[in-house]
Amino acid sequence: MTLPLITTKSEEIFAAAQKIMPGGVNSPVRAFKSVGGQPIVFDRVKGAYVWDVDGNQYIDYVGSWGPAICGHTHPDVINALKEALEKGTSFGAPCVLENVLAEMVIDAVPSIEMVRFVNSGTEACLSVLRLMRAFTGRDKLIKFEGCYHGHGDMFLVKAGSGVATLGLPDSPGVPKSVTSSTLTAPYNDLEAVKHLFNENPGEIAGVILEPIVGNAGFIPPDAGFLEGLRVLTKENGALLVFDEVMTGFRIAYGGVQEKFGVTPDLTTLGKVIGGGLPVGAYGGRRDIMSMVAPAGPMYQAGTLSGNPLAMTAGIKTLELLQKPGTYEYLDKITKKLSEGLLQIAKETGHAACGGQISGMFGLFFTQGPVHNYEDAKKSDLAKFSRFHRGMLERGIYLAPSQFEAGFTSLAHTDEDIEKTLAAAREVMSSW
Ligand SMILES: Cc1ncc(COP(=O)(O)O)c(C=O)c1O
Image (cartoon, helix red, strand yellow):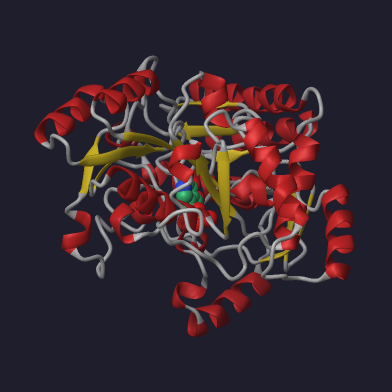
């Protein structure tokens, strides 16, 4: 890409958008508020690349915020969708595609014996919370600072990326009576969780977490943290819920729970299982899932749930991920990227830390180490903004917030990574 980056059409479209949609977007982080400057308006996506309306091409490390793990518009997914389209866009009745995807999810994810499909990660998390409460007869919930579980009222407490980026401690409109049942602890702090259980005996329905955090930047669990939560929840008659909306089928085919060998009671999924169409899911132990209507009394429903196009894209995506070597490849290229970025930061004199697992990575502009959201907040946000803009100008599309993880895909090549590192060297050497 040649500098300066020309984005005249993006600017025109975004100016018009701001008059007709709040902030010009339909999801806040897209507006680039935390990094400054104008967002890029996309025209099309393919493989590891995106093109904006001015014709600029970028190597994409956002991947539609996670779903594009096989690369954008993979031909197998597109062809399957074309076929499915001919049969209809929505049934509102049982279809065999739901069985197929449900069986794939159950086979893959250790905790899931039964599953319910919904339309987004937010919906999955809202539903799983109702189920946690219905099953235990308890109202309180423990979540972790910096973890995001969608925009449901009771999760909008210390909720990471989007909320953090906008500097909103909570959102107006969320009643105190709702969030008073939401208890929070620092991530990776088992003692804090123990304390909450001791202070609220018999009242806590369960613990929900991102088993690898992506919404406060990339933060992996410390050794023993997930295992410790498993023990504590069991001891206290509470449920353990892994929100694997981001990590499911990304960290490993069976998610973080397969990779780390800790099995929660319930799991939420989204992103990858929809292959780029709107899907979420929640599932888990058969005895708990049997409470969901119409098998049981806990009500939850959806006009478009189990939509045939979304099921088709999900099935094809998971089929592609089953091929041998998939996760090894993601790990290899992402490691090269992550280690390369850290090395360049070191050589150019910038304090930085970060890491990756499989096709998920992060880079904080702070010495670190980062074990939780408080540590992540020590990052130099002005530096991140300059880095982000510099990379954008060189054709590299990174998530527009220090508090978001990055994603690679099967379509990213060694050459893409090398181009990205060359751009990073130029940018980091320029200040
Ligand atoms: C871990 C996690 N949970 C839930 C959600 C909400 O999913 P959605 O944006 O599909 O509603 C997200 C979205 O980024 C997420 O990362």
